[in-house]
Image (tube, rainbow, N blue to C red):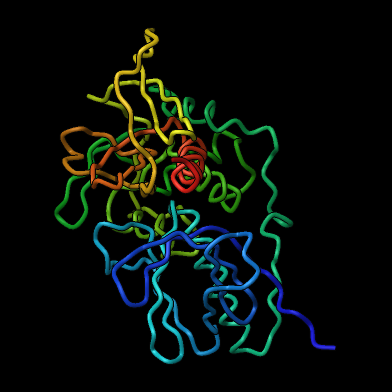
Length: 318
Protein backbone atom coordinates (compact mmCIF):
# COMPACT_ATOMS: atom_id res chain seq x y z
CA UNK A 1 0.00 0.00 0.00
CA UNK A 2 1.44 3.36 -1.05
CA UNK A 3 2.03 5.80 1.78
CA UNK A 4 0.34 9.22 1.57
CA UNK A 5 2.75 12.19 1.53
CA UNK A 6 3.23 13.77 4.95
CA UNK A 7 1.81 17.26 5.55
CA UNK A 8 4.84 19.31 6.59
CA UNK A 9 3.29 22.77 6.95
CA UNK A 10 0.00 24.47 6.11
CA UNK A 11 -1.52 27.92 6.46
CA UNK A 12 -2.73 31.00 4.61
CA UNK A 13 -0.31 32.75 2.26
CA UNK A 14 -0.95 35.43 -0.35
CA UNK A 15 -0.30 33.99 -3.83
CA UNK A 16 0.23 35.90 -7.05
CA UNK A 17 -2.03 34.89 -9.92
CA UNK A 18 -0.38 33.09 -12.83
CA UNK A 19 -1.88 35.28 -15.57
CA UNK A 20 -2.67 38.64 -13.96
CA UNK A 21 -0.88 40.72 -11.36
CA UNK A 22 -3.44 39.87 -8.67
CA UNK A 23 -2.62 38.62 -5.20
CA UNK A 24 -5.14 36.48 -3.33
CA UNK A 25 -5.04 34.62 -0.02
CA UNK A 26 -4.78 30.87 -0.44
CA UNK A 27 -4.69 27.95 1.98
CA UNK A 28 -1.30 26.43 1.18
CA UNK A 29 -0.25 22.89 2.12
CA UNK A 30 3.39 21.79 1.90
CA UNK A 31 3.69 18.06 1.28
CA UNK A 32 6.83 15.96 1.00
CA UNK A 33 6.64 16.00 -2.80
CA UNK A 34 4.75 19.19 -3.66
CA UNK A 35 2.74 22.25 -2.67
CA UNK A 36 -1.05 22.29 -2.93
CA UNK A 37 -3.06 25.50 -2.69
CA UNK A 38 -6.77 25.85 -1.98
CA UNK A 39 -9.16 28.79 -2.24
CA UNK A 40 -10.40 28.02 1.28
CA UNK A 41 -9.16 25.85 4.11
CA UNK A 42 -12.40 23.84 4.01
CA UNK A 43 -12.14 22.97 0.27
CA UNK A 44 -11.63 19.32 -0.58
CA UNK A 45 -9.95 19.83 -3.96
CA UNK A 46 -6.91 22.07 -4.53
CA UNK A 47 -6.90 24.78 -7.16
CA UNK A 48 -3.41 23.75 -8.13
CA UNK A 49 -0.32 21.73 -7.24
CA UNK A 50 3.40 22.52 -7.67
CA UNK A 51 5.76 19.49 -7.78
CA UNK A 52 8.90 20.05 -5.73
CA UNK A 53 11.17 17.69 -7.68
CA UNK A 54 13.58 19.82 -9.69
CA UNK A 55 12.25 23.07 -8.14
CA UNK A 56 14.32 25.90 -6.74
CA UNK A 57 13.42 28.54 -4.16
CA UNK A 58 14.53 32.17 -3.91
CA UNK A 59 14.20 34.21 -0.72
CA UNK A 60 14.11 37.08 -0.06
CA UNK A 61 12.49 37.87 -3.41
CA UNK A 62 12.76 41.53 -4.46
CA UNK A 63 10.65 41.31 -7.63
CA UNK A 64 7.80 43.24 -6.01
CA UNK A 65 9.00 46.35 -4.20
CA UNK A 66 5.73 47.11 -2.42
CA UNK A 67 5.37 43.60 -1.05
CA UNK A 68 7.58 42.30 1.73
CA UNK A 69 8.28 38.72 2.80
CA UNK A 70 7.80 37.32 -0.70
CA UNK A 71 9.51 34.10 -1.78
CA UNK A 72 9.66 32.62 -5.28
CA UNK A 73 9.36 28.95 -6.11
CA UNK A 74 10.50 28.03 -9.63
CA UNK A 75 9.17 24.67 -10.79
CA UNK A 76 11.14 22.24 -12.95
CA UNK A 77 9.35 23.58 -16.05
CA UNK A 78 10.70 27.07 -15.23
CA UNK A 79 7.33 28.41 -14.11
CA UNK A 80 7.59 30.95 -11.30
CA UNK A 81 5.20 30.94 -8.35
CA UNK A 82 5.21 33.85 -5.88
CA UNK A 83 3.98 33.62 -2.28
CA UNK A 84 3.82 36.34 0.36
CA UNK A 85 3.94 35.66 4.09
CA UNK A 86 2.62 38.10 6.68
CA UNK A 87 5.84 38.52 8.66
CA UNK A 88 9.52 37.62 8.54
CA UNK A 89 9.46 34.57 10.80
CA UNK A 90 6.55 33.04 8.89
CA UNK A 91 8.32 33.47 5.55
CA UNK A 92 11.57 32.01 6.84
CA UNK A 93 9.77 28.97 8.31
CA UNK A 94 8.09 28.21 4.95
CA UNK A 95 11.34 28.68 3.02
CA UNK A 96 13.30 26.50 5.46
CA UNK A 97 10.83 23.61 5.20
CA UNK A 98 10.49 23.88 1.41
CA UNK A 99 14.29 23.84 0.99
CA UNK A 100 14.57 20.79 3.20
CA UNK A 101 11.77 19.00 1.33
CA UNK A 102 13.52 19.63 -2.00
CA UNK A 103 16.83 18.38 -0.58
CA UNK A 104 15.14 15.22 0.72
CA UNK A 105 13.65 14.53 -2.73
CA UNK A 106 17.02 15.05 -4.41
CA UNK A 107 18.74 12.76 -1.89
CA UNK A 108 16.07 10.08 -1.89
CA UNK A 109 15.35 10.63 1.82
CA UNK A 110 12.22 11.06 3.91
CA UNK A 111 11.44 14.41 5.48
CA UNK A 112 12.00 14.34 9.26
CA UNK A 113 12.15 17.17 11.77
CA UNK A 114 14.99 17.36 14.27
CA UNK A 115 14.70 18.97 17.66
CA UNK A 116 16.94 22.02 18.06
CA UNK A 117 16.61 22.07 21.86
CA UNK A 118 17.69 18.57 22.91
CA UNK A 119 21.36 19.36 23.44
CA UNK A 120 20.93 23.07 24.14
CA UNK A 121 18.10 23.89 26.53
CA UNK A 122 17.56 27.42 27.80
CA UNK A 123 16.30 27.93 31.36
CA UNK A 124 12.50 28.14 31.44
CA UNK A 125 12.60 31.10 33.85
CA UNK A 126 14.35 33.60 31.55
CA UNK A 127 12.41 36.88 31.39
CA UNK A 128 13.38 38.69 28.19
CA UNK A 129 11.93 42.02 29.32
CA UNK A 130 13.90 41.97 32.60
CA UNK A 131 17.03 40.84 30.76
CA UNK A 132 16.62 43.72 28.28
CA UNK A 133 16.48 46.24 31.14
CA UNK A 134 19.63 44.74 32.66
CA UNK A 135 21.42 44.96 29.32
CA UNK A 136 20.52 48.68 29.12
CA UNK A 137 21.78 49.48 32.63
CA UNK A 138 24.18 52.46 32.27
CA UNK A 139 26.74 50.98 34.69
CA UNK A 140 26.47 47.20 34.43
CA UNK A 141 24.91 46.78 31.01
CA UNK A 142 26.26 46.65 27.45
CA UNK A 143 28.17 49.77 26.50
CA UNK A 144 26.75 51.68 23.52
CA UNK A 145 29.53 52.88 21.23
CA UNK A 146 30.18 54.84 18.07
CA UNK A 147 31.24 52.18 15.54
CA UNK A 148 32.47 52.52 11.98
CA UNK A 149 32.38 50.07 9.09
CA UNK A 150 32.71 50.54 5.33
CA UNK A 151 32.93 54.33 5.81
CA UNK A 152 29.59 54.30 7.66
CA UNK A 153 29.14 55.49 11.24
CA UNK A 154 26.80 53.63 13.63
CA UNK A 155 25.91 55.55 16.79
CA UNK A 156 24.72 53.94 20.04
CA UNK A 157 25.58 50.45 18.78
CA UNK A 158 27.49 47.39 19.97
CA UNK A 159 28.82 44.20 18.40
CA UNK A 160 27.26 40.75 18.41
CA UNK A 161 30.34 39.47 20.23
CA UNK A 162 29.82 42.09 22.97
CA UNK A 163 26.26 40.85 23.50
CA UNK A 164 27.32 37.21 23.90
CA UNK A 165 30.26 38.25 26.15
CA UNK A 166 27.84 40.15 28.40
CA UNK A 167 25.38 37.25 28.57
CA UNK A 168 28.19 34.89 29.59
CA UNK A 169 29.68 37.27 32.17
CA UNK A 170 26.25 37.96 33.71
CA UNK A 171 25.63 34.20 34.09
CA UNK A 172 22.48 34.45 31.97
CA UNK A 173 23.60 31.44 29.93
CA UNK A 174 26.11 28.59 30.24
CA UNK A 175 27.96 28.86 26.94
CA UNK A 176 28.09 30.85 23.72
CA UNK A 177 25.74 28.47 21.88
CA UNK A 178 23.05 29.18 24.44
CA UNK A 179 23.94 32.85 24.08
CA UNK A 180 23.16 32.71 20.36
CA UNK A 181 19.73 31.22 21.07
CA UNK A 182 18.94 33.82 23.73
CA UNK A 183 20.22 36.72 21.62
CA UNK A 184 18.15 35.46 18.69
CA UNK A 185 15.07 35.51 20.93
CA UNK A 186 15.84 39.08 21.98
CA UNK A 187 16.21 39.97 18.31
CA UNK A 188 12.93 38.31 17.30
CA UNK A 189 11.06 40.15 20.08
CA UNK A 190 12.46 43.53 19.04
CA UNK A 191 14.63 44.10 22.13
CA UNK A 192 17.67 44.11 19.83
CA UNK A 193 17.77 45.48 16.29
CA UNK A 194 20.32 44.84 13.50
CA UNK A 195 22.45 47.73 12.24
CA UNK A 196 24.39 47.35 9.00
CA UNK A 197 24.25 44.88 6.13
CA UNK A 198 25.92 41.95 7.93
CA UNK A 199 23.51 41.73 10.86
CA UNK A 200 20.46 42.63 8.74
CA UNK A 201 21.20 39.84 6.26
CA UNK A 202 21.38 37.31 9.11
CA UNK A 203 18.10 38.58 10.61
CA UNK A 204 16.44 38.11 7.21
CA UNK A 205 17.34 34.42 7.15
CA UNK A 206 20.53 34.54 5.06
CA UNK A 207 22.66 32.96 7.79
CA UNK A 208 22.52 29.82 9.95
CA UNK A 209 21.37 31.92 12.93
CA UNK A 210 19.38 35.19 13.07
CA UNK A 211 21.96 36.65 15.49
CA UNK A 212 25.70 36.70 14.82
CA UNK A 213 28.46 36.31 17.42
CA UNK A 214 30.81 38.48 15.36
CA UNK A 215 32.80 41.63 16.00
CA UNK A 216 31.68 43.17 12.67
CA UNK A 217 27.95 42.47 13.18
CA UNK A 218 26.37 45.55 14.78
CA UNK A 219 23.20 45.88 16.85
CA UNK A 220 21.35 48.50 18.89
CA UNK A 221 18.65 48.49 21.56
CA UNK A 222 15.10 48.43 20.23
CA UNK A 223 11.76 49.71 21.50
CA UNK A 224 12.33 53.37 20.64
CA UNK A 225 9.18 55.42 20.09
CA UNK A 226 9.31 59.06 19.01
CA UNK A 227 6.75 61.34 17.39
CA UNK A 228 4.10 58.64 17.27
CA UNK A 229 0.69 58.90 18.92
CA UNK A 230 -0.61 56.20 21.23
CA UNK A 231 -4.12 55.08 20.37
CA UNK A 232 -6.51 52.46 21.70
CA UNK A 233 -7.62 50.09 18.91
CA UNK A 234 -10.81 48.03 18.76
CA UNK A 235 -11.19 45.43 16.02
CA UNK A 236 -14.75 44.70 14.79
CA UNK A 237 -15.66 41.90 12.40
CA UNK A 238 -19.14 43.00 11.27
CA UNK A 239 -18.72 45.52 9.82
CA UNK A 240 -14.97 45.02 9.25
CA UNK A 241 -13.42 48.11 10.85
CA UNK A 242 -10.47 48.89 13.08
CA UNK A 243 -11.63 51.80 15.27
CA UNK A 244 -9.13 53.90 17.20
CA UNK A 245 -9.76 55.97 20.31
CA UNK A 246 -7.98 58.45 22.55
CA UNK A 247 -6.47 56.26 25.32
CA UNK A 248 -7.14 59.05 27.85
CA UNK A 249 -10.87 58.44 27.48
CA UNK A 250 -13.88 59.22 25.34
CA UNK A 251 -16.54 56.94 23.93
CA UNK A 252 -16.45 58.25 20.36
CA UNK A 253 -13.70 56.91 18.05
CA UNK A 254 -11.24 59.34 16.51
CA UNK A 255 -11.41 57.40 13.26
CA UNK A 256 -11.66 53.96 11.66
CA UNK A 257 -9.87 51.85 9.05
CA UNK A 258 -12.05 49.78 6.74
CA UNK A 259 -10.50 46.32 6.60
CA UNK A 260 -12.58 44.47 4.00
CA UNK A 261 -10.22 43.48 1.16
CA UNK A 262 -7.16 45.00 2.83
CA UNK A 263 -3.63 43.56 2.85
CA UNK A 264 -1.68 43.51 6.11
CA UNK A 265 2.00 42.64 6.48
CA UNK A 266 4.81 43.24 8.94
CA UNK A 267 7.40 45.80 7.83
CA UNK A 268 10.93 46.53 8.97
CA UNK A 269 10.78 50.25 8.30
CA UNK A 270 8.55 52.85 6.68
CA UNK A 271 8.85 55.91 4.42
CA UNK A 272 10.78 58.71 6.14
CA UNK A 273 11.72 56.34 8.95
CA UNK A 274 14.76 58.44 9.88
CA UNK A 275 12.51 61.37 10.65
CA UNK A 276 10.13 59.29 12.73
CA UNK A 277 12.87 57.08 14.23
CA UNK A 278 10.44 54.19 14.60
CA UNK A 279 11.89 50.82 13.66
CA UNK A 280 10.36 48.12 15.82
CA UNK A 281 7.39 45.78 15.46
CA UNK A 282 5.73 47.78 12.70
CA UNK A 283 2.96 46.53 10.46
CA UNK A 284 1.26 48.10 7.47
CA UNK A 285 -2.40 48.02 6.48
CA UNK A 286 -3.13 48.78 2.81
CA UNK A 287 -6.86 49.27 2.32
CA UNK A 288 -8.81 48.34 -0.81
CA UNK A 289 -8.71 52.04 -1.77
CA UNK A 290 -4.86 52.02 -1.56
CA UNK A 291 -4.60 54.02 1.69
CA UNK A 292 -1.54 53.05 3.76
CA UNK A 293 -1.57 52.93 7.57
CA UNK A 294 1.48 52.16 9.71
CA UNK A 295 0.99 50.83 13.23
CA UNK A 296 3.41 49.73 15.92
CA UNK A 297 2.84 46.88 18.35
CA UNK A 298 4.50 46.55 21.74
CA UNK A 299 6.25 43.29 20.82
CA UNK A 300 6.85 40.93 17.93
CA UNK A 301 4.35 38.45 19.37
CA UNK A 302 1.66 41.14 19.71
CA UNK A 303 2.32 42.30 16.14
CA UNK A 304 1.79 38.74 14.90
CA UNK A 305 -1.49 38.48 16.83
CA UNK A 306 -2.79 41.74 15.33
CA UNK A 307 -1.83 40.67 11.81
CA UNK A 308 -3.58 37.32 12.14
CA UNK A 309 -6.73 38.90 13.59
CA UNK A 310 -6.88 41.61 10.91
CA UNK A 311 -6.32 39.02 8.17
CA UNK A 312 -9.30 37.04 9.43
CA UNK A 313 -11.58 40.07 9.56
CA UNK A 314 -10.41 41.23 6.11
CA UNK A 315 -11.53 37.90 4.64
CA UNK A 316 -14.75 37.34 6.56
CA UNK A 317 -16.05 40.80 7.52
CA UNK A 318 -18.34 43.04 5.51
